[in-house]
Length: 356
Image 1 (cartoon, helix red, strand yellow):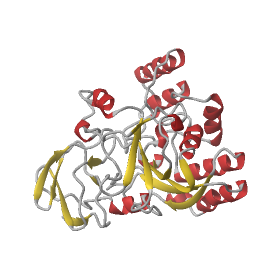
Image 2 (cartoon, one colour; image 1 turned 180 degrees about the vertical axis):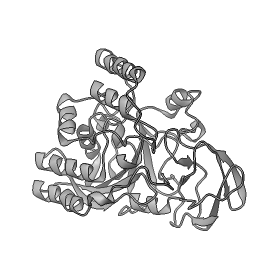
Image 3 (cartoon, one colour; image 1 turned 45 degrees about the vertical axis):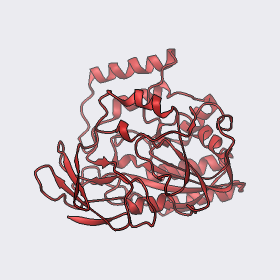
Image 4 (cartoon, helix red, strand yellow; image 1 turned 90 degrees about the horizontal axis):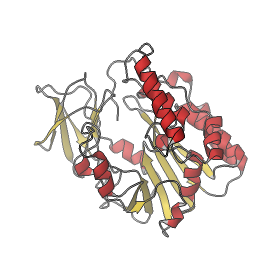
């Protein structure tokens, strides 16, 4: 089965994604050239593949390892990228991309983009090489980092540049203190700049059984000025994460013990354990940001909301940074929230899942 890949008139890094029964591997061809066999993502019924920038007329074919065309494949993400760059003039804008790791959203051939991460490429290579993450992180594709920012100190201390947009994919859920993080990003944005984020929809990920993050959670981490995941965030992540699509297992004493030991460690030592600090449904995210707007903790107005598409595991929000009234900011999120009914939540047991 083939489909056009890269309908945008830009060159960009693009993942190919699809669904199959695990564990399997898939083989990908682009324009008849075999790109090789790829393993699925760990813990999710999906796979993501990095390859060189695609062109508008490229054809992509995806097969199971034994040669069968993958049903409803490929999902090559040109529509996703068009949502992430919605409203951004790639010709004139200076763009921040947060946490690109091995899957940058934008290639430097497509735009003036600066990659930001907590460590340099050399340090990221040390972190991921030989760690058993080959199914999820490709060290060879890790981007060269332009701005090293640990998310703790002011970002203005590590760059004197000003930007017109900030984009990120599956980053915000890892941030211990989202409010301070967004305020920091705002300090290097020009008024009218855009912050656009692809955010995991917990209804479609291994976070399915976790409770959504509440406004009180975000305010607590802000007032505490959290620079590392809290013991509660660590414990909740370890005890409630399961493979997507699996029934909730009975309580495992060994998992609980491991979770407590990690929670104790992050409380008593300068120990950073990377977890999903926050989890959101579409509605809960919009509700949280409506509340934060009324508190005057963000200077963001929702510009566009792209709900979770069938076959995807994320929603995308486009927010404008500027000096807005609190009611106007809050109403922008509330208006989008009112368009989403509970029936929009996707059932994690549905067959044919296709996750990005």
